Length: 249
Image (cartoon, rainbow, N blue to C red):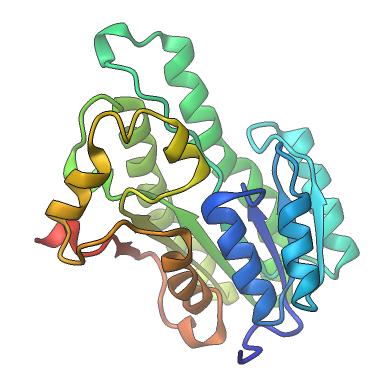
């Protein structure tokens, strides 16, 4: 594989499993040094990267907490400072709005939205000082589809896209880009243990998508690799729908 990311350090949140793991492994395969930030045990992700000859460290971290994010930044500095930030971690509880508490609403916003503030505040100064940086935030096609039963989640993913559009205009002058990716329903450990199968959502996704199969974490690696490379230098403030064509069918 072409080492398009050689010499770069990438921070990937939520990379202990699922989409984050695929992204961390994919960036490492392209030559990036990877910092895995996750509350869960990332040993398997580290093993996969090491087996392929890559370099990675794991930092147990709560991305909704500023002090915890400072620990991620310290680990990245030991690898030369973060050039790439992949904001992947998030939560998606299924709760109808009429049964949702404000605490449940705030928890989703804290993890899915407040974390963007903490992480970008921590890593943007270094990127701007070096004159190069790539930020990719994971949104969701649920924002474009208006999926019911997850109002807090859909609102949070809409916030991701708004944040990306606004911040792009502030940081482009310093050689830093920020974009979002909006996947379809993706088969991960989290979605495999949630209500998605029981509700028939994977079957629904296949019916509605132009690409008639379930999205896998690996389907998001190519787009992420592009948006974190030199090749995407003139792309910023955008949301790329990587959802098998669901939001456009």
